Image 1 (cartoon, each protein chain N blue to C red):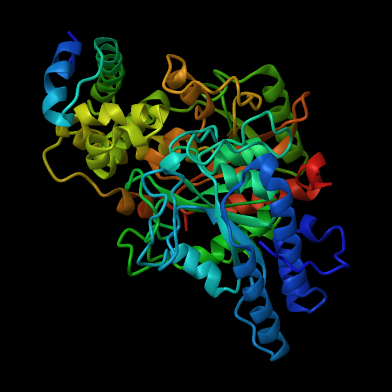
Image 2 (cartoon, each protein chain N blue to C red; image 1 turned 45 degrees about the horizontal axis):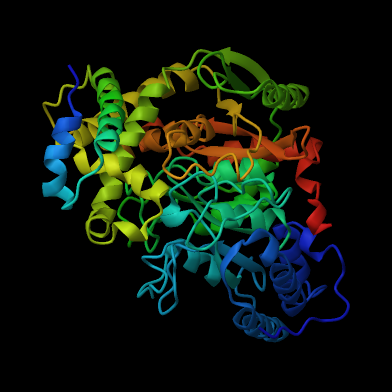
Length: 66
Length: 480
């Protein structure tokens, strides 16, 4: 079941942009977003989200080899 | 524009390295006026061919050169770049001056502040030659620009200059000047570096201040230079790097002595060659050039080790989520009010962000450190650096990549940034280095990526490679 559909984009577009993409473009956008969201599910599978996420800059500093 | 060109300019002035030309000016073998005049003359001559500049400030640069020579005559040295002309991607703000960002929307924008990176280069004595053409708002890997005209490749003007730092790539390759700023959010320094036969550094996030730089994706944007030699790049990086009170994300780490690092042997350093992902879309011709560069490193005494890398599609996709969300944070108002003032291909790159739920953006950000640790664990526990193609394919023509927002656009962007995009999400440094030419006479490059803040080691390896190869000394026909 895709998370974002063409219909949802067309519905929200008017409110967000004041305009509306063509149905073909809405379908393309939904396709792009759904690929990204599927990857996100995989990438974030083991991230607990129970505390503020670690800072990238702190991690970069820790992972540097001095 | 009137420019007073001295009559006796040694023909190789503009083919010198930045380090050598700075020394020649410092030691008064050449005046800044001679060098700047030569730069301006070549810039004017090649502008109709390459379209590298959005604004060429020849008279202003010559006035500054005269001041630099007068200072030197009085024994005053501003810094290691005294009197050296440089031009930069037109997105680095100078208070009171125009910064176009390669756009229609900001074509007359007058900045009210100075970019820290640019200011440090100017404070070191460099002369500002002008603003360089770029992809609109630094968005796009080809150098097409409907507002300012397409930027063309110095090695063959029918081919792309790469993007988004297209003008820096074409102008440095054409020997108009010696090095300049680009910016890299997904490969925008490394792609034009590989495409133009140049050295380009994507710095570790936090090494160089982004203050006063047009943002694109504010957690992934990085500042760095494109040059012809690794040593030149190390000099510029050393000048720009270091903590900046105006950019809270800059690192407090001391800036290493890159020059000392480059003097060391690379014997025993471990270079990883990826078994998976990075060669998935690489053409055989590019693969052969990569193999030759790896052989050169082996001959220099480096240990070559094959490594399995994590699934790089994940950080690449995560970078797209972050990019979309952050780009519309900056562009959303203009996208709603002035959609027609964007090129279709740029608007369409940001458009998914308009429908990006906050939950997805925050999850992508929150996953970043996990993916970074995983990459460092799987790769940098086994090798010191990872060697990959800088660009997976030969340099495409302008016509073949002029896809506007058409069906082929996402695929074209993905192919051109196949090896680069993930690094901006992970935050790690990467150095692009030229490694030869394809049969059509266009350049190719490799990329070395390392642990966070390992720029010194990347310079060490790149400098050693350039010591045994001469790709960086080859001249495009129009510059010879």
